[in-house]
Image 1 (spheres, helix red, strand yellow):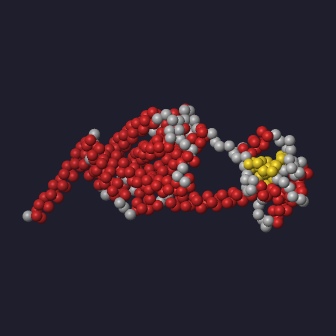
Image 2 (image 1 turned 90 degrees about the horizontal axis):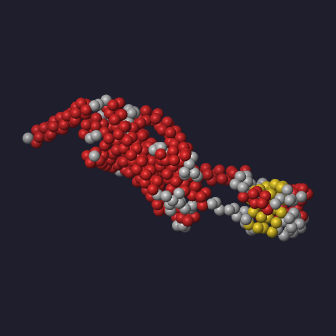
Image 3 (image 1 turned 30 degrees about the horizontal axis):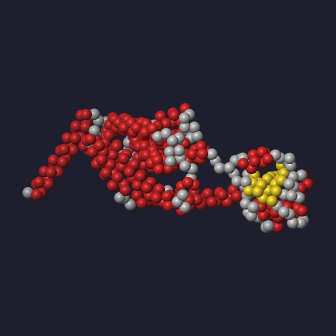
Length: 410
């Protein structure tokens, strides 16, 4: 066992150094910047378009006569405003109850931001608005234009209720789950092509003769994990700086997970490593069967679709951590990390996480063992005799090189 770990350390150190110290690693670190920039640009454009297409709505609880006068005044003001959109008006029953008003205002599917009561004689505007804001100002102008004289408008601000603690923790779990999925999809796919170079120049045969093939798989897997963690550290530092700038260093503005922020952050890192190791070992086994870069590219699409299916399966557990779907997702090794990180946001118990981590480590070892055996049979086409052949061949090459060096010295 110690010999296997030492061999894996040698392979991993070689691959990690070759990856991190290369110039292309800088482009790897800059990779997420471009999707973020595009997301910000198109998100801003989308928000602007949505703002133009869906102006806020004020529900008017008044008679038909008052509503007609108010609508006419609105149209005149909008025409005089050179195309500037004003709040939309929607007539509701003048006898609307307080409970119905609250339901109309607080419904997540409703775009009604305020309700006017009292008619044009004593207009009263209540809703999620600022008394000195744009909506109140526009409505004041409409009412005065409709009555043709100054109107005293009363405004009552009613904020939307804060989500419950359980709902806030569910959102935290969804965010952590999406983060793990995004990072794994971005990084784990690189393991598909880890053995292409060694297979193309026949180095893999020499490596297989010198060290167990399990050590090659394990070393390459952990090397890519450490390289990914280096990239994530850089991205997380930039993200932490942005969060500190926008939240003024106060994380309490974010929904607090059930286990608390320090433990939750540690669990997110651990579950990313576990998710990467499990999926990476599977992808490494799949990519080991490919002989060319073209074959790896052909495999990329099914691998991506598989990740999407796993994420969809794990998303069923969010909001109900003790449901059969959540328990099944936690037991299934490919989705266990995604399910358990959401559980950490929703429930405070820590012992299930220890079991989940040990369970995933067991599967990492099992997958590497199976994939190494499959690699021997299908790619190396070797048994014990084949292994001894390559070992003796490597020894013969080393002896010949030593003899030539001695002759040159003499």
